[in-house]
Image 1 (cartoon, rainbow, N blue to C red):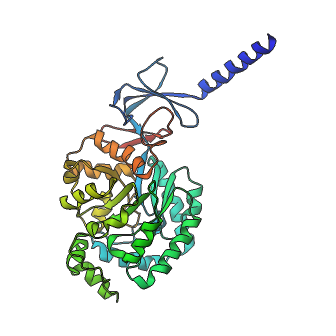
Image 2 (image 1 turned 90 degrees about the vertical axis):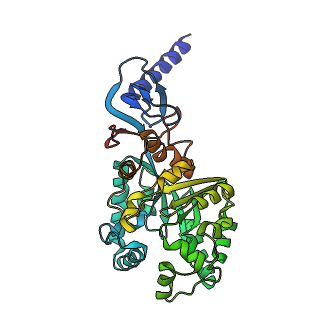
Image 3 (image 1 turned 45 degrees about the horizontal axis):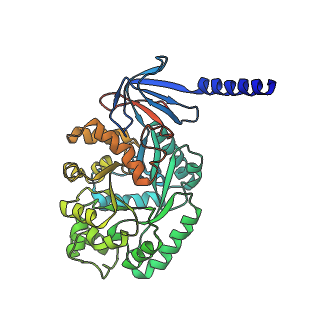
Length: 397
């Protein structure tokens, strides 16, 4: 009997201690994302960040926040290792000028400066409410800083090489980096135009259905002309670099039609930028890929090409839109909120849609949706406070 009383008392003490550590948070609106916004809603959250309850007020003793509470943001596309190039590349020069400038800066920057820039970039993203990132890797430079960050990462090891003769070396470099990276991770192509078909074949054979494959897509207008006619700015750039136009160019088709069969081993295809995408290409993706996600990086598109993607078309075609920042080489800040504000000021988009794009859609694209992306019991999505204009007020959790 004494033992039973002791155990009941111990259990009661544990429950009371857990309640002491639990936070009860309310706001003008809670945006769970998986359900309609809750006016004067309440979230109970443990000290480890796990959602214990979401709904109407139960007791009336909650912490009150003026504004909108939504899940932490998912940044589907970033190059953290390029953070050293912040404010060093002229805006609006186009993709050719951007690439040339970046390579020069990269060669003239020490690893110490590069490492410090990565650490600062991760801190900036965390302060801006970003809880997960799809990070492009060409080197192992960012791995140490990411291992010490509270942000979740999907490491995309990016490879390129448009000549068949360079395929084996590029592939071995990719495998070496893949072995160093933490999970989740995958080896991905840089862009339709920057790989030989031999290298695309190696990537396709490497894929598993549950992995996400990410690829830069239609970031510049010249990409389409290059595939269809082997002419234009992109062809001129390669020739000026002394590079041969590969034998599969011209294909007489769009970029995604030309290489789409190499992306079909994956359940999820993440197309990044889509600045010059058209209806025919969206139709192709719908017909040929199981799940397609369209990662928009509007500030980077303005920075490089001074052009925004056709968001109205993507909305009309009811595709899965998600949000990325790209790198500090092509952006002034790593802030999903900044990306949403650009979209909101240029297109007719509801707050509900924008928040969904910035949270659960990105989480699904990266395979983090069991833990992140919505305020649901059992998840640990983080909580951020916004005003009605989608300005970030505070990162709560």
